[in-house]
Structure formats: C-alpha cells, structure tokens
Image (cartoon, rainbow, N blue to C red; front, side, top):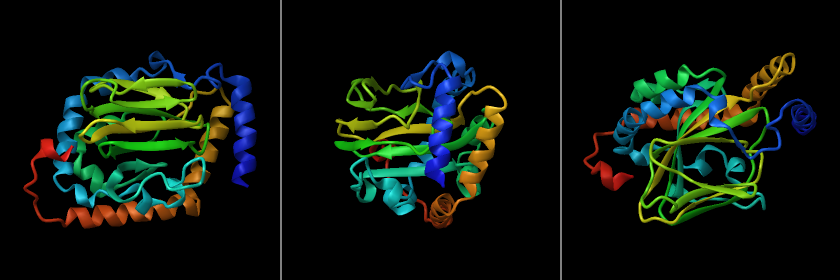
Length: 249
C-alpha cells in the first residue's frame, strides 16, 4: 500500500514542484533557517549536556533494524557508530528528550510544517553507505552542531552533488535521492536533522499532510518511536557522568 502511495505522490510532486528534481533546495525558501543558524551555539550547548550521557542515546540499529539498511539492504552501522537523539520523529514528540533540550525544542517547534528533529551523532572514520529516505513529501535540513575541522572531512553526497558540513550552517535536501555520508576525522560529528513538509500548492499540500499523518500511525513508525521512548526513559534515570564534553563529540 505504501509503495503505491509513494509512487503516486512522487509523480504528483514531480509534476507541480519546480524543485522536485533537485537534490538540494534553496535555503531562501525556508526563512526559519536564519533563526536556527542564529541560535546554533545555544543548540550545541544543550546537546553537549546530553552527550555527557551519550551511552543512553540509542544506536540507529536499535531504533529500527530495517531503517538501518542501505540501498544494498545491508546494515549501514553497528553499535555506537551512528546514534540518533530524537526530539520529534514523524510528528511524535519525545517529551523526556525535549525536556533535556528546552531551547532547541522551542526553536524547532516554531518551524512551519516541522515533522522531525533529531540530533545525529556519527563516529570518527565512519562511512554511511548509499541509502534513500522514505517519502518525497518531506525535505530534510541539516544544521551543523559540532563539525570536525578542517571543513571537508565531514561531508554528504546527495545524487551527484557533495557538500561539507560547517558549524552553524545549514542546507536542505531531498533524502529520497540516494545519498551517503563520510566522517574522515578523528572525532564525532553532530548535526541537527529537521524534517519539514515539502512546500506544495493546495490541494496537494493537504493530501501530503493527510499521508504524513497516516505514515505517523503505521506500525513501522510507532514501533521505532517506542524504542526511542524506552531509551529516553533510561537516560532520564541515568547517573551523572563525568566525561569531558569535548572528548564526547
């Protein structure tokens, strides 16, 4: 059923959206990006505190084994190589995690059409192989939170275009294009991933919102969110850590 819905929406979006065939979108189409970038140090400081208990941030494979499969249907990461700390996931609010990052939560909740907000932590020397997102009705923004230097060691390729991450800088892309990621540095890379509804004319925008609400209710999503909530509950009862923040990222 989902494959048919996705195919139909892909066709409709391609017909009506001038950006449908572009891997990266124009930042000027998303005025809220300026506000997020202006507060990126606040976002980083909040997540630094979360990273003191990083062992309670779930591994991607523990959230969803199927979601950890690349284009070749092989696992993209194992154990702590790739971790996601959810504030929102497909419209589901993770209250305990939001309480740990209140200012970041306030910022992302002010974004029109926001459907997801996740801190993604990638281990040193880690390569995430080619993979694709689920649905073209969403676009994904990456905000650099802690990016190893020099610029270029950490980068993403979407379709045929490669871009580096930078601290406090953002870009928006269509993750249904095949994409892959590299962290060639000796320290962890952290970005804030924000999923937003793709700008569309009515009535297609209304149809897109309806489909997104349906996706939110599917077992595939609700099972993953349950794992995220379980991890959040564990982390909320974790003892204080003494790890140096700089060493944690």
